[in-house]
Image (tube, rainbow, N blue to C red; front, top):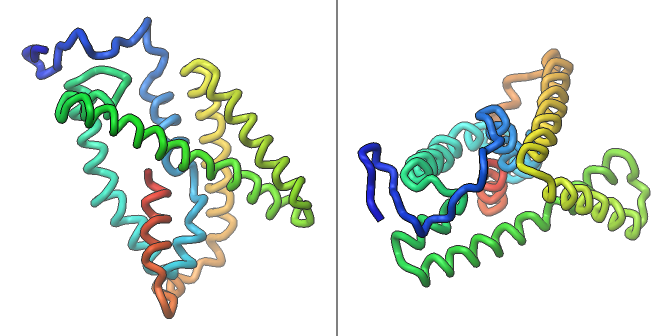
Length: 213
């Protein structure tokens, strides 16, 4: 492997991109939004675990001390090694084949466990919002529907996935704006400083990290 004048690693063993990339910066931003927070969902657990004050502090602190460093690392490494394999290649080149293999498996298992929660979350939102009297089988059905839709979308091209992400992001953000405007007259700043008697730090920390990653 060699490094050119701009600092990009030239390595014939790196996986190559096939064809022209369909992602513009806007499409990439929409996919990033969907794959990270996708809206305020999950903040309920943060407020329950630590109260409004801890939730507000967490929303401001976590992106700065936890998310921003990851963004800088990904930006630098992605520019040095322009490949879609991401951290799998980075770890492989830095620590060898075994570490790269181990990292790839851990990455796959982590994503499998993480993604498994979203159909459940989808079904729970449907049940709590529209069908509170749903039976256990009906709840499972809602979750399977959410899973099936996700599988179909994931089988499409990157451009089509970004289109779905754009539509979903617009709908979510529009809903947030409407709710914010409607609730503004009822905002009481004194409530922002409330805390709970016993802060559940494990739930608070894990929920905040889950929201932003």
